Image (tube, rainbow, N blue to C red; front, side, top):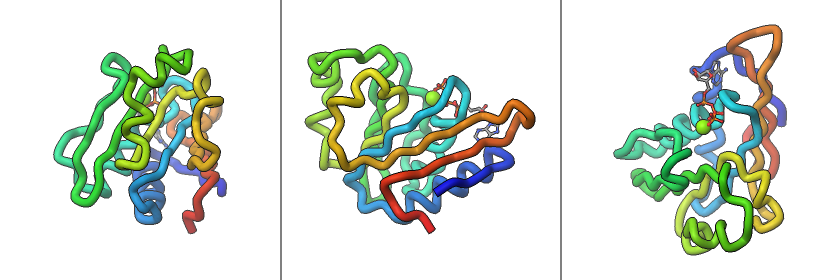
Amino acid sequence: MKVITKNTHETEELAHKLASKLRGDEIIVFYGDLGAGKTTFTKGIAKYFRTKEDVSSPTYAIAHEYEGDKLKIYHFDMYRITSYEDLESTGFFDYMGKGLIIIEWSENIEKFLPEKIVKVRIDKDPEAETRRTIYIEGIEVQ
Ligand SMILES: Nc1ncnc2c1ncn2[C@@H]1O[C@H](COP(=O)(O)OP(=O)(O)OP(=O)(O)O)[C@@H](O)[C@H]1O
Ligand SMILES: [Mg+2]
């Protein structure tokens, strides 16, 4: 599906809609440039599950864990992860199936991910500062 959001709030609303369809063991993979809104979308998902912790960009930590009311969220930034060994060392495979996994910057390790993933692509709009085109694949949202 394709959705256009006009501001951060609308992106978070879309994240809530997606979150409401999740079982809690999915892998969500984001695509989109720096500042596209991947972390903003993740915040929307975390809010839906009322996590105790605030979502922050995991760039320096690689992985963050949030505890929601009915599931755990494992939030990864794979920007510097380029090999299978690197990926293993993040704990990714241990977390699989134990909670909701959300990945930013997975381009380098895409080939190691399972086939069944939810893909969210966020495109900025050169003509409107706060407009995003968001494509969701791998799950029915509406
Ligand atoms: N429609 C929108 N949806 C999401 N974010 C928006 C929108 N309009 C403006 N923004 C702003 O764009 C920025 C998105 O930042 P965010 O950290 O979510 O991006 P990111 O894709 O995670 O970047 P990075 O690659 O650095 O991790 C925020 O400052 C947010 O307020
Ligand atoms: Mg981010």
